Each structure stands twice: as structure tokens, then as C-alpha cells.
Length: 361
Image (cartoon, rainbow, N blue to C red; front, side, top):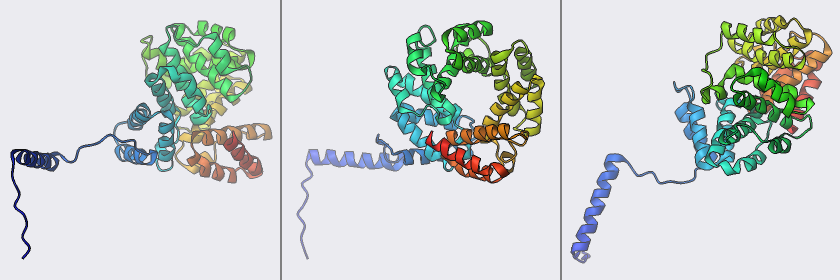
């Protein structure tokens, strides 16, 4: 039989053995320690899905995606969200999520705000990342608004999505800096925006007045859930204005109609007709269609979004809105968009081309 040498149990050996025993007992009782490591987006998305899928907490995804951005950066968080969208319909309408992620990125690294603008697609999640970044940057400044130089540099003078999105968020910020005085904010829109972008700035003012997110953050007003009373209040407000200001107001009201009435196409279109202007009705409904395209749950409902329009020009305009909204929110909506196109009859080719154009842009 083979003989093994005897162990010499010196004081250091005994101390080491004791430590090993204690460590083993800790692991047995509490589990192995969690060492910090940089996770891959796939691993993080799997973890977030496990925590939030069917979770009772309404803002679960928002909380965890913001945490991912804070820990690993905005680009990482965007990758996590895109992976989640493939399996979780709840995050495919991502404007609010992206808005929070953009805000978190700037708060975590205020000096990188302009670099973050160049990291994102300004159209993605219907401008959500772009809005969040600009809003957070402005809020961290004393004046709570972008400087003229920054507006010129970021927004530009051209009628592009980026410029329009920038002008829209400027409207939000101007209402805050005007202490919730809508007329003053609208006047500042006319002063600070080039003519093609004024309508988007007006829209931002009215949207902020409706959502009150920034106004409540600055303790200027209290937020309240949307309902019939908020609809009537906003209709009265829109009725005070004319031309592009009124058009912008009725456009934002389309979002409220769709939200309060659960994306009911005939009801939303009928409510938009309260504007008593064909132009305002059309714009109101198209803005509602942008929302309904990504918040409806049934494909059969999606296929009917453009049914209120009978003329070629308005039908194609509606189709463009619907497809663009879906593609800009998530690639997971591509199949929804393709099925939508199948039911557009004479406009199928136009619709499929709109999908490809949206992917490129």
C-alpha cells in the first residue's frame, strides 16, 4: 500500500484551514458571491425579461433599461432594448422608454450630451432618444432651455426629421421656461424657430401641456390621467387658435383621442371631425394613426387604420404614417407592416415601398 506523508499542521496552516471552512459555510448559507462583470446585451435582456415579463410593476422595463444605460452606456441599453423587442410586444412602442434612457444617459454623463446625439438615430423610437437627451441637457442648464447656438447647430434650418424632432422638444422646454404660459411659449416658438419648423415647436408646446411631464417635474402643475374632461379642456384650447397653431393643437389632440378611446378607429376619426376643418381633421387623425399603428394589439385592427380615407392622396399619406411609425419603433413590427400592406388593395406596391424607404431612413 502506498504511504502518504503526514501533514504538518502549523499555526498558519490551521488558520488557512479555518478560513476555508468559514468561506465554505458562507457559500453554503448565502450562495456564491456576485462578482462585477460586464454582461453582454443578450445576457442583460434575458435578465430584464425574466424580471419584467408579466410583472405587476407598470414601469419595470423602464426602470431596468435605465439602470442598464446608467451602468453600461446608452449604446448598450439600445442593444438590450432591440433584443427585448423581438420577444416582448410591450416594449415595441418605445418612445417613452427611449426618452427615459436618453435622459438617464445625459444625467450619468452631462458633458457627453452632444456626443450622445451623434450616437443615436434621431428617428428611432419616434425620436425618443433624441428628445430625452435634449430635454435632460436643457434641464441641467440654469435657463432650462437650449441656447440659440445649440438650436442652430442641432436642429438645423432644413425640414428634416431631425430638425422637426428638435423643434418639437424645444416646444416642450419653452412651455416650462414660460412657467406654463401657453401663449408666451407659442410666441417664443415663432421667435426661435425657422418657419418650416414652427409647427413642430407649437406641437411640442401643446403636447407638454397635455402630458405635463416636464411641468410636473418642475412643480409648475400636477399631472392628471387623461379622460373626457381633459379632452374637452384641450378642445376648448384648440378652438382659441387658427392656422398652424390650431393645426398643431388638433394634431396632438389626436393622440389623446386614441389613448382615451382605446384606438377605436371610427370613434377617433369622428372625434377629430370636431375640429370642423377638413385640414385639421386629417392631421388630427394622422397623428392618432401614428400611435395606433404600434399600440393596437390585433392585426385585424391595424389593417383598418386607414379605412376613413377614400381618396388616393390621403390614403397614401395615411399608409406612409402607419408604416413609418411601425418601422421607427421596432424591427419587430416589420411583419405587422407587411401584413398591413397585403390588405391595402390597390396601394400594396406603394405600401411595400414605404417599408423599404423607412428601413433606409
